[in-house]
Image (tube, rainbow, N blue to C red; front, side, top):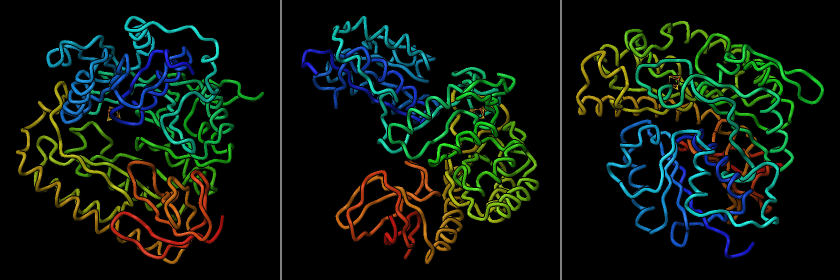
Length: 440
Ligand code: SF4
């Protein structure tokens, strides 16, 4: 590739959904002949894909924009924060352009204005799977945009709009290209994976001479046929989720459910506008584990939600004990501007939120450790993410990239990134497992 092609640096902040947006933009720009720069220095244009979910994420985004501006190139800002451009221009009046979430065309148009593409037919050769910002062996696949729920702490529907699903065949064609390109693990994402296809009224589309409905369970089944790991993220606790558990037990999709419960106290859940029958949820979890004993459940919770009482918080801790989840993330409630929840009840003082967060984390850590320890002595399939002297570091079926733990593997022969090894588990610490490869 010629040195004189325009160079673009890219910062992608926020969740995997934003990462997929970034991949689409980068794929498009590479197809037009732009080069990717490793850092802002020397780049003609810097693109910052921002996250606007929490105040802390907004602060990080503003900092990243500031850093890009300091390096001198033209800075284009996109992503969730772009929905409120004045927040950006107040702090950084010199940004070249601001576009909102999923405005790929607008980002590309802004890049064209900043530095027009140089015509070179050879650089149009972009791999058919697109440009991945993740390692070659795993890929995020976004099956829909937006969300029809109206959780009161969340402004995502305001930023990203209502649910818009991709036709099933479109998703499956992308997956086919990814698998052909060597991807071994698919991370299925959206704002609400279980709602997939509701907006399309589950309309079927044709993939390889057969009809596949745009429905969560049908898509999960079709994804399971590619013979690679399929991990389902952001599954809202609707009753129809129960249908996917047998597919997990059969090994068609990974026995891993990323299902944000957010709280357990009925009062709080009602104010959150989330499903509030947590007793029933406990019974469902028990049933899921009966059907699929290896099931890993990951969830996220919010402590310090407006009006959360000590009694509500105790209910949450007791529920955690009863649910015995494997992996849990916890956030202190942040009064994001525009979130309905801020006006529902009194805000909880920061020191109370902090104290609750610490006791929550302490309680859950003991649970997670206990569940991890049960794996000692057993064997796990481990996908290798990095090679180290004498072995590698990878993840079992229970570990999603970035958010879960790792498996540290000792091996007699060199491991390769992306290979799946059978590992005998010898020890566990708070988050990670350690073991030796016994099969390749
Ligand atoms: S389901 Fe998720 S994205 Fe949708 S409103 Fe609730 S928290 Fe926000």
